[in-house]
Image (cartoon, rainbow, N blue to C red; front, side, top):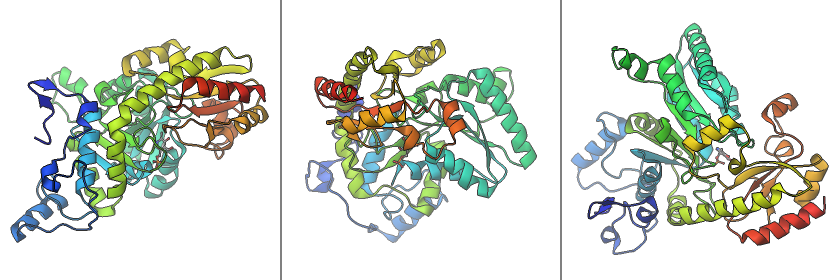
Length: 434
Ligand SMILES: Cc1ncc(COP(=O)(O)O)c(C=O)c1O
């Protein structure tokens, strides 16, 4: 019953399932909410059960562990969390991690081998881009990228070059890694075009349609959905295989924890689970419990933040000191609008505000804010504002910054769930000070 997703034939919505899915109070003294299981290990009912569980943990038997073993592998709070996270993305399985970056690093390490090439959209969150370029390169893994808004032709061309590069290096194209929208430009990636290009260049659907073998796909498409997920985009529906989150942002939603996750079909998750079993990096039980609490309100919080952003962006747009907005609710480019219409259910609440002027004007604006906090991160209940060129993207070379549109007059804002008119009053007085 604890894992039933229907009532009288009605498929229940994720917002409903967040209150109880995957947890049976009867198993925990009737406690309405799951207790926090502070234990490093679990007693087996019998030695035979212990053996069977370890066969699952070590991969000797497919399907993973069917019981609780040891808290580096699995534990109740994390399992409930993973079950509930999978629901939002329509995934078979989810895995939780101690941070978004742990999730990303373990995912990439699972799939990359010596000589392999990772193809990614650009820009990525700086630490993700750094992990590929700085750390994976130590193990003979190289990369190629294409710009976030690229067409199928450009993506196919990049994949073809990556395939040749991998052949030269004695490897394969091991992963296509996307981030959409890109940070801080908000450029969207066309996931449908990426899937079509992947299938055409690296096998799969195209060959099957031509009467060839089904030629099973071995290059997963992974996508960081931190900015729009889980409410405003479900990239698995557009053909991505693995969805990645920094749960620190909208899912955690209160700027009080750090965690990450990935989700997708069992086929893609199992090898990652095996590496996580070896390395560790699973989310701790206390954070998992906090995330379960957060998931109960994630739809409410994101909806309110999204509504606030519409109102605030409409106000900012007409302000004489504002040069422009990078907000998904006000896209000016036809191709980006087309991707938005096919991929997104909402414009989010994180956007870039371009002021007339440069760094000095932005700093004056940021230093004058009274309600909005001057801090990096996003997706919390409170509004945050920062200056990417001198903060999150300080280490990016100037030429790359220019290419990516990370200009000195760009302020990144993540709108929270405060009263929208109060925030407008704050922005008004801060703009006055510029
Ligand atoms: C898009 C994106 N992905 C991944 C991360 C990394 O997540 P974490 O800070 O939880 O490790 C961040 C953090 O800001 C992010 O913005």
